[in-house]
Length: 196
Image (tube, rainbow, N blue to C red; front, side, top):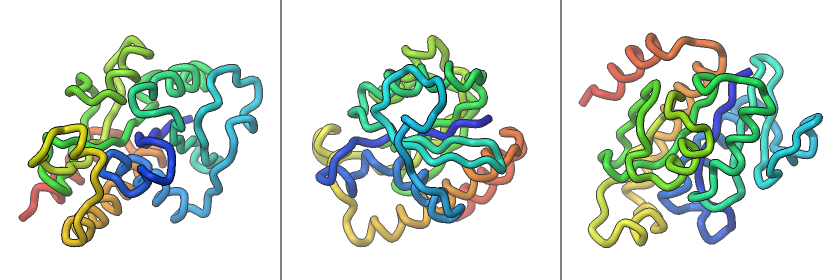
């Protein structure tokens, strides 16, 4: 099994904000694959926090997950879910926003620190490891303070750019969920993403 977690904040007021692009990637994959989001109560013998929703695929064997905790408590969901599934950290991929990347830029890495991102900090702390793949979606540098920036919505021009990036991120994450190894994926997609 592989687990793809998209990070965001719950609630309608946050749905279109920059901080929620991780949700958008997961939702795009679910829509493309015809998967329905369900309650975690459908997971047999799961004993962890049920503050998330999931879409289950059996071919390939995968879970698409959106924590419904706030960003800084994402590890409260991810850690028990990884343990329940009996998978290694490298079988988990987290998709999230990154304001250190230009708007729409995408970066796929096999591991790394949290980079100041509270959701990633929570997951790394919970797992006790940073050895899991991550796909970062650039939301651009703030002209105001960081907290205000991540909770702002994209302008119409920015939305066009981010929609393209979300589609590309969904394609890369889907390929990984389908069993493709990370190294060739990084080579293939980074060459595409680096083109002007």
